[in-house]
Amino acid sequence: MKPAVDVNNEKNRNSDLNSKKKSRDGNSPKVRSGFTVCMKLIGLVKPLTGFMVGAVTMGLAGHLCASFITIFAGYALLSYCLLYTSPSPRDGLLSRMPSSA
Image 1 (tube, one colour):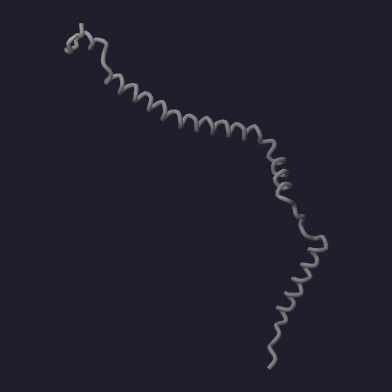
Image 2 (spheres, helix red, strand yellow):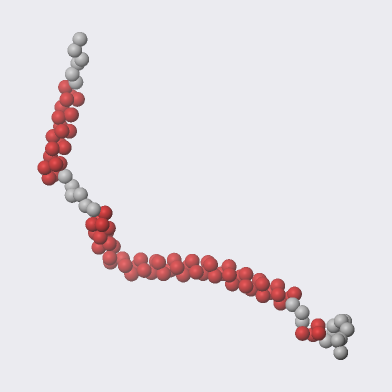
């Protein structure tokens, strides 16, 4: 027995082949390299350069503040701890250690 031929499927297949032929004939979109696309995008965002520089600057400032606040806090904590653990200049006068002279 012969398999039944689906007429709709044959039409779809023929239309797909015809569309591929059309796209090869020049009706397809341009193929651009990645470099070309990047250069077009840079051209489009050129008016926003000032805002982008400002955003990068503020981001850098925020990063530095976040980094240095911990460094300065550690420095302050160490200074505070060393202030109360170091000997006082008055301790030399009241020392109970025998003098060497």
